[in-house]
Length: 208
Image 1 (cartoon, helix red, strand yellow):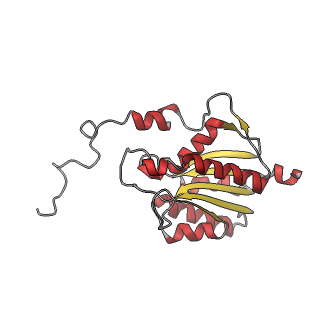
Image 2: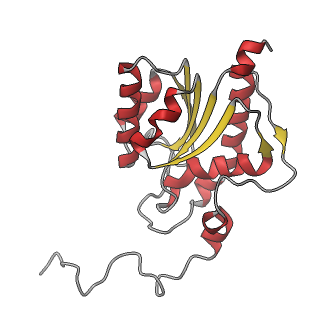
């Protein structure tokens, strides 16, 4: 691979909210990549969460961006899709699963206005199954796509930018231990201990 491609600044961005079930897919894929590999200096892995416009400086500095997210493509749950460049804002505009996608559309618009649109934008998206389970982890359907999505990200980095990461010997640090996927999902309190549907004493009933 030529030196110019290797030196490009590449941002691998996982966006979404781990508190809302399959919404956390993008973050969990990056967690998996960070745990298994170390990436060369031109590559930055970023847990973008739901930060919206706060992500603008990171995107302005990037020449290539790989986004991982849960997106409503209108397909069966767990289906992986790859979109690139102009198709990325188009698919985010067509079907939104959360407010963070509206914020990300604004970022892409601002990048274009300021003349800082990355030369290459690739979206690795999964069709979510459940989004309204507060405090819940990924569904089995979507969790099964973490490794395939991670492999797709690695293939994009290699094919598009000539970058191949090295296997990691120790633990990654992208996601703090308290909210890493295993403890977050296995240590979840029961519904009786932490009600996730609301308090019947204060909810307004439809037949009231």
